[in-house]
Image (cartoon, rainbow over all chains, first blue to last red; front, side, top):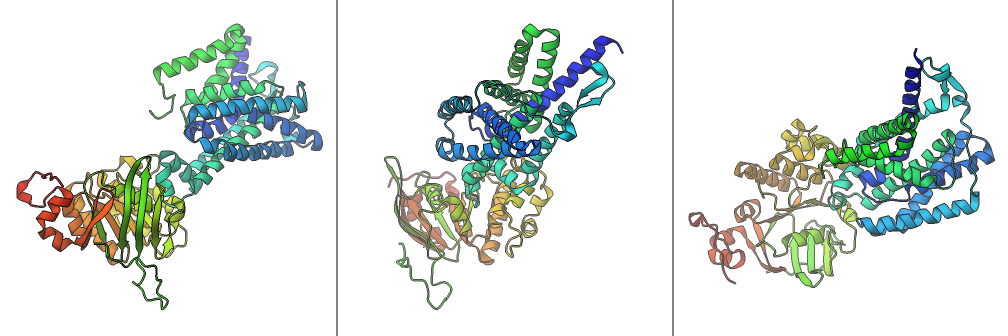
Length: 292
Length: 263
C-alpha cells in the first residue's frame, strides 16, 4: 500500500477516535445545553473535575473502572449542587446562566490548580484495552487498543442515551418538559425533578469523559477551555438537542482537526471554525437541528 | 347566584354528594397591578358545569389557578374538601384534576403513543391506554404520529385522552370546541356526555354558547373576574336579554352576526 494512503488512513482513524472522545464529552452538553437550553459554560470545568477526581481515585486504587465511576459520581454530586443552588433559580435567563457558570469555571479551575498544581497527569488504560491491535492499513501496522476502545465507549453512550430518551418514561418526560413545561406539570409530573436529573446526568457524563480523555491523552490546567469549545462546536454544528447531530458534529470536528494537523498544521484550528461558519451559514439550526 | 353550599362539611356518614367535587370560595388572582379574579365563588358537582363569558373575563385564568399554574392571591379551592391552594401543579394533577388546556398543547416531540404511555400508570384499574383507544379509535390509527401532525380534532382527543389516563375526579376543559369543524364538535359533545355518565365531573369553559348549552344543564357566566350569574341551560337559552347583557351575543341564529352590547 502506498505510504500516502497509509498515512491518510491513519489520520482518518485518529480523527474518528478523537471524534469518539469529543462525542462523549459533548453528549452531556447535548442534554444540558442542546435539549434543556441551560447555558452551562462550566462544562469544560466539569470535564476537568471528573478527570482529576479520576486521577485521585486511580492513584489510590490503581483500578481504571473505579476511576471512571468516581469521575462520574463526583461530578453528578457537583452537578446537583450547581443546579439546585444556582441554575434552577435562573431558568430561562441565558445571560445570567452564562455569567454565573463562567464564574464557576474560574473558581473550579483555580481550586483544581491549588490542589493538583500545574502538572500533567495521565491514567493508565484498563487491562482489557492496553497495548496495541494489529491493523494492516495504518502506520506500523498496529494501533492503540485504548483509542479503539473509545469508539466502543462512544457507541455505548449513544445507545444508552438514545434508549433513555426514546424508550423510557423519564425520556418522554424530558422531551415533553422541553416542549411545554407547564403542561407537563399539569399532567402530574414534577418537572423540576426531571430537569435536575437531566443536569446531573449531563454533568456526570462530562466527569466520565474526563476520565476517558485523561486516559487517552492527559489532563493539565486549562484543558477546560478546549473541551468546552469542542462541545459547543459539536452541538451547534450537529444541531441543538440532536443526539445523531452530535455524532456528526463530533466526526466533523475530530476529522478536520486531525486532517488539519497532519496536512496543514498551521491552519488546523482555522479549518475547524471555517467548517462551523460554513454550516451555520447554510443551516443556522445546525445539520440535524429543528428550525427554531 | 352562587349557592351557599361551600361550607366544608365532609359528610361524616360518608354519604356521596354531600361534599362538592370542587368548591371555589373567594378566589383572588392578580397579575402585577391587575386584579384578574376578584373573589370567585363557584361550586362544581357531579353534573357537568359550563363556564362561559367573553374574552378576557378571566375564564382561562380561573383554569390556571385551579391547576396551580398561576398562584392564587387569596381564597380557597377545595377538591372533595381538600385544599388545593398552595399545592404545586403536579400535586394538584395527582390529587385528581385533569386539565385539557386551551389550544390543546400536545407535545410536538412525542408521538401519540408516547403521550399516553408517559401518563399511564401500570396496574391502575381506571383508565388504560386500551380503554382510551376504544373511546378514540382514530388515535390508535395514528399512534406513531407526532403530536403536531394530528388534525385539530385529533389533537383535542389526545389532550382529553392523556388527561383521562390520570383518572381524574374532575376534568377541566378550556375552550374544547375552539377551531374545530361542527361535525367534530358534535362528536366531542357526545364524548363529553359519555364521560359525564361514567362519573367524571366536568368543568367546561366555552366561548361557544351553543356548545355550552349542549354540554351541561348548569351554566355559570363570568364577567370581569367574577361569577355574575349561575343559571340553567334551559333558562339561559330562552333569556336573550341575559345573553346580550353578559355575553354580548345572542343564540338567535337569524341575526348571524354576534351583537355587542354595552353593559
